[in-house]
Image 1: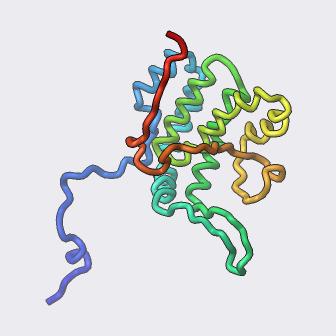
Image 2 (image 1 turned 90 degrees about the vertical axis):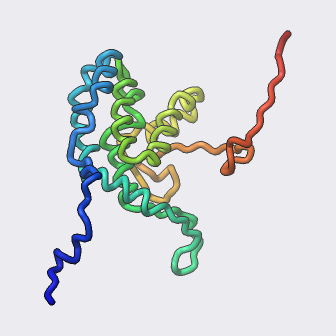
Image 3 (image 1 turned 90 degrees about the horizontal axis):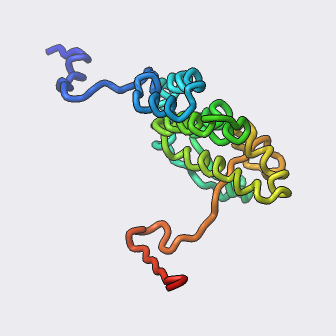
Length: 210
């Protein structure tokens, strides 16, 4: 009895699932986004938003999102020779997403570096398109973006850090910040029971005045 490879592979017909949504423009048919951008004074950014929507809707970039989640960061305390390195290894797809967000789209810096009417709205719209691909890398992008007003409160610190915070680039090298061409900013904080069930957190309050 002869069996073809195709016959053996087709065990059933998939009829209740849609095809993957790829190679489309994530911005072009988003009516709510288009109306919001126009309403809040960023109509001038429509062309750049359409360009970013085409990129973030491409099969290539969507695949980066899946790969960045499938291959999670790995901590390496020592290299294979036994030297202490204390570094985190990321999949190349994560670096590609960060490159797209920081160097290409300027999601961390454009309203600060190029202020103007609707600049924050345009940046938020680009970020919205980018985060649909993969949300995890949006965390360092957002923290870097949000750090600028705080850094500007202390001119001496701003003079040292802002040139590299606002730089349109991505430098993933594990080296001191003084040697980098661009940096991202993170926050360190302590949460009560952080990392566990946040629903178990408790708070208290007292009146400052009657």
